[in-house]
Image 1 (tube, rainbow, N blue to C red):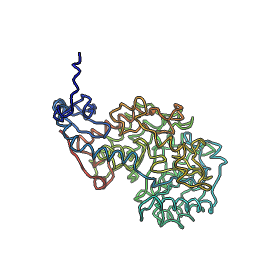
Image 2: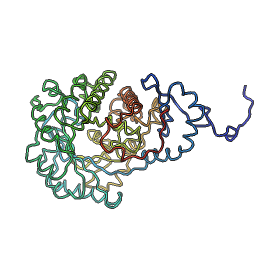
Image 3: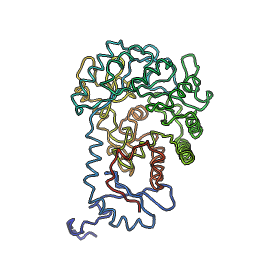
Image 4: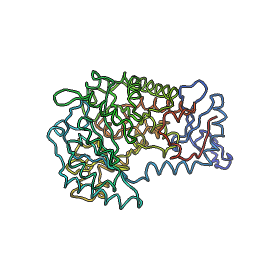
Length: 467
């Protein structure tokens, strides 16, 4: 029976456990026999604690630490979630593609018969983007333009002409299926310091060509490997493997394959379910977790043996986001995600979307860049729907202890799977295991093996608590 007393905070001497007065600490089992993670999820504050010391930590020591620096942690997290301005654009110079990949996020009719920009149109778009970024970013900043697809190399002449014209205004990147990257194209892109990403989905043609194939149902494994070998020493090069039910079991083997071919950075991205093709070959979450973690184990074994890294960038981003939230390089695993907030996408007809994943869905266009002001487009309802999507409004994510290490991505995928932006990810269990693995890496002091060189120079340690 309550006595009805109205106790003031100061009567507790500032030491609160989970009483409702103070920070709500939660314990996360990270799969180690001796340590757990203790997390205050709102601030993404965490500590690794010996299991026998949990009661002592929760009784006040961690609360005191959090009280001392909690405000700065909250400011950092709020800025990361709500204070950033767009600094990049994904630009599709053409809707067409010479490939018909099983899981493509763009509709088939668009890839077959869609629009391709003229050089004049592409130049106009880049001029408008330049003007917009000059207005919102600090003087001297160089925004990013990622030439994306469909297949941007189908607009090679227009793309290369505009890279020449604007190379001192933007950091350019290009994402290609690699089939049209001949020696002349590779030389041009390298000479202009363009970031190059290509895609490969298996360590053999029998696996890789199942999902990545042209309109005649033929793959291009050998061509892609040839391009990969030519680019392996190029610092601004990476390979994306889209993980599906067709190749999930090969992830550890893919690590060895990429390592043997001199690749330094890869992404093992779970297939997005924005179209029916992706939904049909989504890997089981348990299998995805198992083989993804086995692949991470293998990168560490190779690093220990040779001292050379193979960075799995999507995991490295999660790890960096835990070690220091502002160390993230990708903005998918936080809410609101980066779509419409840190970057946006421009289709070949000039329509502007929060993210490339939305391009196949006209209702998410905020307007046309060739006809309207970019700043106004970014304030439209389709953009607001994405940029205000927070895990705090999603069940069960609102009560999840790792909600700011995951972010319940990807809104485009979730919308198409569930019909509602405010729903959990179909990869929820996989993301959870990825975070557990990241905490194990930190507990063992192995961050350097999994993160890009210089990552610790990009972050500032404000608190260190491994008990």
